Image 1 (tube, rainbow, N blue to C red):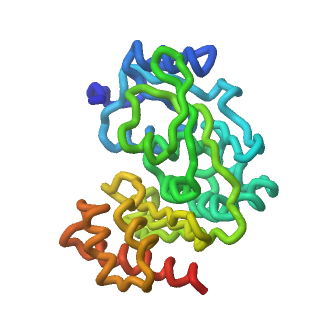
Image 2: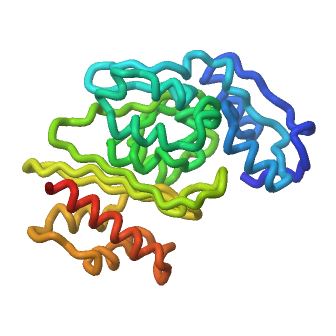
Length: 274
């Protein structure tokens, strides 16, 4: 959606929904974005000098908060702040890779404002880790109808004005090796140039899951690399991985980051075998 050229926040009208379903209806009706912590949204709008005419304030909706284990997965409300997730010992024990990724997002002040749903919506640092953990998202259509998708499918074509309500993540299984590494500059608020995550399972009839994101690089699963690494009976070299990554990450073709991605992925694979 192209935002109208309002130069500052004073021109933005805030809409207050009474429920998550009402918020989805309002967003579709007014073609308006959602805000909660809005740490990324406000920064982007301020830098561009381009604020929306209207925005949907999700902050009062308690139904979108919380973290609990439900059957064979953890259910986390989209408005749950990142800082609150880092203080839950049961979640940390069940999903140590998620805990590590959470503590690496921004500074403590940012984690106190930012929400899990917002991080997904803006393709943030957590998304590659959530992808390799096989996360699913519950979301509402513009008519208020509830849906569920894998996060990987959601990212391929996010429905316009859909509202993520909860993120579902299965606990890490015994024998899973999960890694996440970021290549970032030291400048504040800059997104990582490259973020590579992987989940390795060496039992029979299991799949490896690999994912990446970065500045100008939308989060995604690395399907060609996954297939090659699952089928190969030998340790692939970085030279083997580069043409596969070029298919998964065509934005990096002829860029030095492609070799960096291959090196990071090769190192993660090697560590998973030790």
